[in-house]
Length: 511
Image (cartoon, rainbow, N blue to C red; front, side):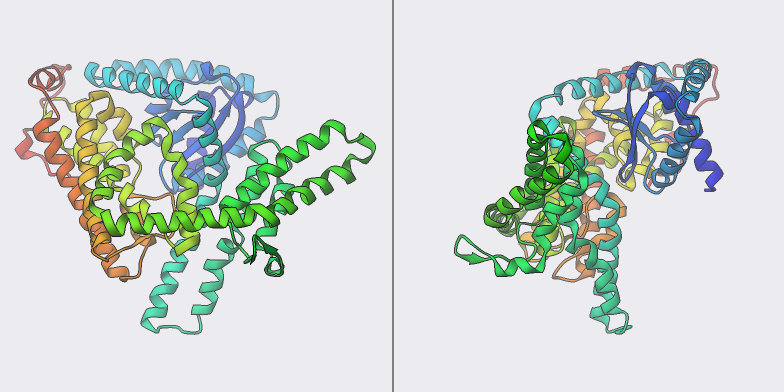
């Protein structure tokens, strides 16, 4: 896709979110353009969903437009450029133009929209709004802020993770021995300093000076800490990892804010930065590094023991409950745990199991497709969303299909539980593996797999888990996902003037 296409997508999105004057922040993660808004009421949701490049929208603490992997990283810079070009006064006209454009776009969409599909979209939107309201509790708001610290790091984690996997292949095969040390340095450089980035983002997220948060967190990775003794033990560079960095930077934010309340302005530039680094630095060296290091070790030990002794059951529970955790916003608490496991052993054993929830979702959506042969509008939605679903982007299927239908969401969880149990069982049998980075799932996770049993075993077990998730999600939804009344209500063609749909037996199978 050309740069002009990405800019055109950004230009189409901008007026539909209220124009440049309504945008307060811009960021992106693996699949979503995340926008801070001044006035949520200016956003035209249905017109956004109607854009060909938009896979869905999620209304959370930031407004999130799902564009898919790859596309989002190219559309976001174009979107930022358009906001800058508009300046402080160009947004009003853009917003007004957006309203006019949206009016016609929405009318066109509604005119050609199946009533059944429209009802499902409306119900899905209502469920998202209800979830947002439920997620506005103090604990969940903190979890979201923690997620905001780690999400910007995901692209680097993915890139370094893939390079580490390639380096492992070359090391095991004996090929290109001169290149192996270079790849090792490239793959490990970011991970060796990840605490600094976590500290920087923590201070930025919680209202401190980012570079001061990074300076305090840098103490953790400084080689000279090996000369310091705390709790009867010499510290090790990197001890405490991202957990220690997060705690140290958060403490620095509070010290900085405290200093701003009493330090005279004439000496603020000297006193505040000094105390912000000094006081949290001492606490980090003589307390936080040791405590966070012990916690990190315990997390690694618990994850290893959990899958080694009860892998099948643990996988069943984790795979089955992950979609509900996403609905509740509690999955964000897992991001620091994943990162800690990657620091501890080089990969997170939890992510391949949790990715099985997406496999169950895909299987359930395919079953809905075949169970409703006359509902062409919903089948079109499923066909357009399935490619993204196979790559781990589940929002269009969740909010457009399974969640508003109700029972298919439950049967999708059953598929995820089955796939998780399959992967967990092989972990229990000794074929342990994980992902060297967080972010991707579905087929996009294959390049990031690693483990002591070898890449071939990891790929085979993960592929087997996906197949089980697809199959069980499909079967559970096909046979138990609909009541007779649901089939009678949903398996209809609301547009009798349209050409007749092809018989199911004459249609190509979806894979």
